[in-house]
Image 1: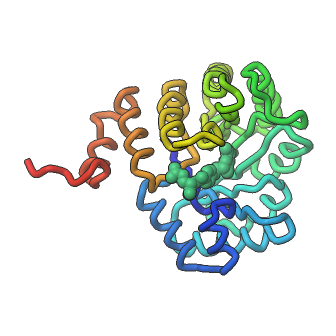
Image 2: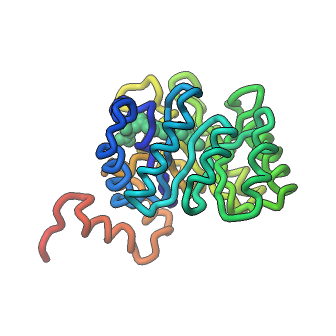
Length: 269
Ligand code: THG
């Protein structure tokens, strides 16, 4: 699994406070802890109004890069902001995200076509976020066609089939996994990712739902997630699922998580 650490995000109240107060130590700690917990990328989302988003993101990106070597995932819904941030990032990471909305692909693809940047592609367009797997799949096809036309290889695209909220859309998980399966079948080289937690919006005990969703989605080919890698219950579910899906050769990741104390203090033999 490719883990994208979600915690540097201005929509989380504690991170918003640190951003407002320009609390460097707090942001550095979020970066370090997530990297130590196995994050492959660190998502950086300002969560601020557009007028101060660029300045905030630039500050966050500078701090994260100074603290850790983990590549950055630039998270903004504004393609112009993403374009301004790319030159500030030391080594290619991810852009989060493109979609089939307006001219996002047309604006961003020329700048990342050559090179190693990975691209998160959302299955939404100017009509919004569809719930039906057919529409999610159709949008993925439209984005893939554009990526192809710029010569962007499938393995640089991470499709996020945008899971709906199960409280209002009972088939949210079923639709997400069906769309993800069909996308992977049609474009076998792509990766599949998800922000996971949208599924549980408005429900009590969200973590239980998020955790079971991670397992079900991995069973349908999810090979990446935007998640909190410091949440040991989520990591335990992730490593255990990898073992059960025969994705963890010789249980190397599972055992190393065990030795690292993920399931409590290892017992002496
Ligand atoms: N898809 C893509 N990008 C995304 C999202 C997505 N970016 C933003 C968001 N959704 C993913 N990021 C977050 C960040 C924080 C939380 C949820 C989604 C959150 N975190 C809790 C906290 O830090 O308090 C902890 C959760 C936990 O411990 O598991 O709520 O869908 N492409």
